[in-house]
Length: 144
Length: 290
Image (cartoon, rainbow over all chains, first blue to last red):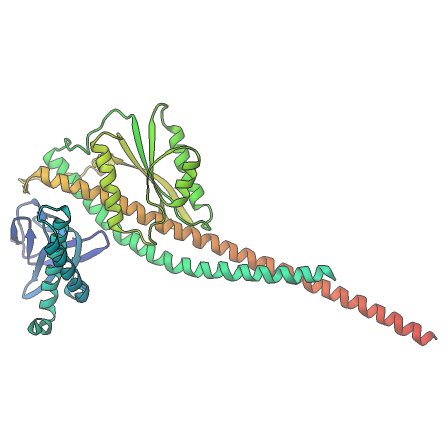
């Protein structure tokens, strides 16, 4: 019998962010976005900072995740991430400030500087958060 | 007369102390609640990451990671979690006693270096001429993941460069404010598969992307960070719990003392009044006789 759903858990060091049965997810794997359907072959993969899209039937939920792992088994997917946020949890002013700060640092630093790598990562996180939050509040986007 | 004033003064001072312990108790209650929430919500992540590590090391049979390698033990690194502030009952004393008995059990000839988090532990072992290699005292109020990651980085580096051959965490496990238990946990070398944790690995062809080695590398790093973070949170919650318990006892004792003192005060007052009355009666009587 074919499975229609699988169980998804998104866990961060702070708490279990998300736990529910879903039909499909699209996760930011280290080398590009990766779609997972039920009965996927077991695997473990690295995740980067990006948007995690969770589908349950017609419904779609987006989450901003940063750096982590995903363990896939046919009936269960566990995502361990450093941070994961639902759109309503994202602090937009903070993300904007982080983006500005990271951009300033990047402009001032040489590309091979270790600090530039960190700034790049933080820029990536800020952009991901803003992207997820923008979908949640369409009004914000039209203003830009 | 002197005496009654003294009692009065003592009542006042005990009442003031009672105010302070009462306030500290309230503060500890709220802080404890938050700390407890943090501890409990951090446990799933630690458990999951442990599970994942077990799965992977069983599937891929990787015991070759530098941080999993067991060496002859010569040098030991302790990570000791105590608090910065006192007034938390026997909390610090208990962890330190635990650490001492752990150190006493070690076979002779082991070099020990200590990484302390918290002023109390640092002061204690510094006075006894132990080598404090790092110290993270005077940290901000909240244990953060960033700080844990920093500590993790340091000890992983130490282990890789063979500066130490075993790493232990000593912290207080939080069960409830009245049930705290100092614990020792061997962090390095990482040995994820212990007797009770062996689970039947899921059969089938697993794929690891980018590669098992890369996954294990990151997973182990994350595992160390998480374990330190958890120990940190447990220690924090325990400190708050111990303080709450200590302050509750102190407040109760103060209440008891106040009741006793007031009783004594009234007793004195009464005897003084009786005294004065008898004197007055005596005076009146002598007047009447005249």
